Length: 376
Image (cartoon, rainbow, N blue to C red; front, side, top):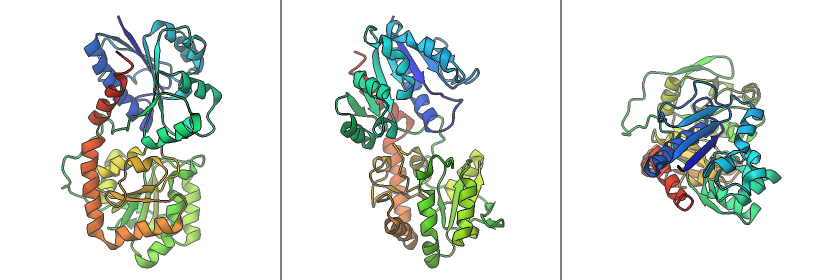
């Protein structure tokens, strides 16, 4: 019987985009295995007991390692001989297979996400990419960067989609809900108004490129034209304190809100409430959060030369700006604010683009099509 081994960082036991990708991959592999009569095994590095996705069939063997590198590596090292196909969600998981990859019969498919695949690439990662039967990238942007950095490898883009458990809106007509109050950076509580700029995600000092700092920098000039603009940065992390101090230094403390971790219910209400989603990030391989905002028909601002350009259509679903351009970001924000009807049109276009290209089923269809050349 044909054996497919899916090697993942984590599924329900880890947060963020990697979980979204892996849930979609597992659903797609399960569909492939059902048609081919194949056996499926999942090796999950970070998941613990109880983290197995509930949609997996009983005949799928799910093995979790709770972050134990030694145990994970020992089991994985034998898979080039035991399996017919090895699927990796991240290149950093693959080095244990290198000693037996050349003598084993397993075909190898590895996903590439961002700068780890094209900037300062580890030698072991380069070996994995070069020897893999197929490298799938999360965006055309990542694929282009890899082609310039690595040269010879077999790569195709496979644009991501929302999680299979994400609650899709099927209509752009929804209630905003009741009022929302948060404590601002100045220590006082305020109600959110109608001109909220939202940026969602972890706030970590070792990931400074998400776009919060540039957005804060343009805020004083934006407020000189639109004094009621507010910025909300939901998400945990050690950067919150730095951003709070910076907001006070700029004199915009009452307009900046850093509520930390928020519940799914509050996040849903923030997406409904916000005027636009603004994330001028310098580090997105793709940018699933733009899709989340598009699910609420919100216009988005991202950056050129970034994964955002595979999601946002400039001057159609939002704006793309040059990385590090103060004027570009200021102009994009103020153009949306000065023309609410255009902002609404962009949001509606984004909603339709999401539902036509980036749902979970769209990704699974792309993924299965890319694998056709490998699993013949």
